[in-house]
Length: 634
Ligand SMILES: Nc1ncnc2c1ncn2[C@@H]1O[C@H](COP(=O)(O)OP(=O)(O)OP(=O)(O)O)[C@@H](O)[C@H]1O
Image (cartoon, rainbow, N blue to C red):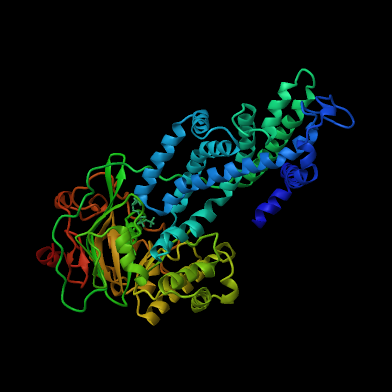
C-alpha cells in the first residue's frame, strides 16, 4: 500500500485524478446539504431562463437553478455508480475467485457459468432487467451490476488461478487452513491490486452507463434526479437554452475522466508484473497404473512411510506424460533419505505426490501408500491430505513463493497452532515466535512482524523449516531446500534441518540434484532417472564409487568435482540426454547413455531388486559385481 501511494505521488496524472475525485466527494457530501432545497423547489418567476450572473447555467422548466441541480445530483450519481460497481465486484469475486479454493471441478463449473454470462450482450441484460424489475434507480443499479459481474468474474478467475496453483496456498491447504481463510487471507490479498485498478476504471464507465439509462428514461425517475436525468431534461430545452445540457454533461465527463485517470495511473504501477497462465485441463483415458502386486513388507520395524508402485501422469497433447513410474521405497522413523537425479527425473513430483500436494491435473496412482499406519491408497488428495494433517511438514524449494507475500511471517506460522491445536491468537503468535527462535532467527519477536520480502533468502528458508516443524511432524519433506542459497548459508540450513530432525525424531526426505549436499545430511539416497528409482544405496558407499552398482549413479558421482579434480581438465559430464517422457520407453531408460547396455536393456525394463551392497538396484548389468547380481537379482 505504502509503495503504491508513494508511486502515485510521483505521477502528475494520478495527482490530478485524486484532486478531481476530492472535488467530487466534497460535492457529493456537501451539495445536497447546502443546496438540496433550492435545487428541488419550483420558482414560477424564473422559468427556463437563459444563463445569467444569478443562474450561471440558466433555469429549467420549473424555474430551478440548473447548476445547483447538477451539483446536488453528484451524490446520487456517484453513489449509484459506486454501488453498482461494488455489487458487480462482489458477485464477480464469488464466481471468479472463490472457486480457486474449492478445487478443479468447481473451477471448471464456474468457468462455464462465466463464459455463458459473458456471451450475453450487455444491452440485452440491462433491458431484460428493466423489463423484469420496472424502471427506477434501484433497477438501473442492479442492471449495471449484472452487466459488470461477468467481466469482474473473468478477471478474478484469471488472477486467482495463479494464486490457486501457488505453493503458499498448497502449504495452507496442507496445514488445514479453512477455505474461508484461504480465500480471505491468501487469494484476496494477492489479487487485490489489479482488481482495485479495474474497479476504479469501472466506476467511471458505470457513471456513463447509468447516465445513459437515466437519459433514456429507464433509470432515475422524477422527482429524483441524477446527471443522466438532468441531461435528458436539458435536451428538452436545447433550442431555448443549449447550456442547460452542458452542466450535467460536463459533470459526467469530469467524473468519468477522474476515475479513468486514476485507474490508468494505478494500472501503470502494475504493468510490469509477471502474467502467467495456468494450462487448460484436457480429457484423456484412464491414467497409467504400475503393473504388478504390492510388495509385502520385509521384517524389522514398521516403516513410517511405505510407497509401492507410485506413478504420476499428466495430460499432454498426445496422451499421458509419465514423469513418475512405479516408484517404491520406504522410510523408517528418524531416517533421513536423499533423493537425487538430473533435472526432470521426477524427484519433486514424486515427493509432492507423497505429501498429497501433486500439481493440479496430475493423476496419482499407487499399489500401496501407507503413512504411520494409515492407508492413503484410494483416497482423494483432499482426504489423504486431511489424514496427514500436521504429521507431514513440507519445506518448499522457493521460499519467496512458498510464503504468502501479503501476510506477516509470524501470522503464517501461527496458522498451524490456530487451526490444528485450537490455540488462541496470542498463544499461536507466541508459538510462532518460539519456532522462529528455534531455527535461530535473531530477534524472532520483531522478525515475526515482518513480511517475507523483508527476510534474506537464508532466513526465509529457515522460516520455512520453522513452519514445517511447528506442528511437530513425524516426516519432513524438503524439496531442494537450499538450491537458491550460497554455500555457507546452504550448510547452515542443512545443519539446522539435520539438528531439528535429531531433536524431534522426525524422519526426512530431502530432494536435491546435488549428491554432495545429500552426502552431508542423509543416511541413504534414492537415485532417480526418467521417473524411476534406479538405485537405493547407503550414503557410506559414495566415497567408494566402485561399490556403487548402477552405471548412472556412478556417472553422477563421477561428475562431482572435488579438491583433487584437475582444474585444467573439463568436468566429467554424462553424455546424451534423458528420454522424452511423453513417449513410451522400451527397456531401460538409461540404455541409450550407458556404456554397458546390451540388447536386453533396450527391450526389458529392469526391476528394482535387492542387491548385494545392501540396497536396491534396477539394472541388468550392475557394475560392482555383475555376475552376482545377474544370478540373484532381477
Ligand atoms: N504440472 C505439471 N504438468 C505437466 N508436467 C509436469 C508438471 N509438473 C512437473 N511436470 C513434469 O514432470 C517431470 C518431472 O518434474 P520434477 O519437477 O519432478 O523434476 P525434478 O527431478 O524435481 O527436476 P528439478 O531438479 O529440475 O526440480 C518434468 O518433466 C516436468 O516437466
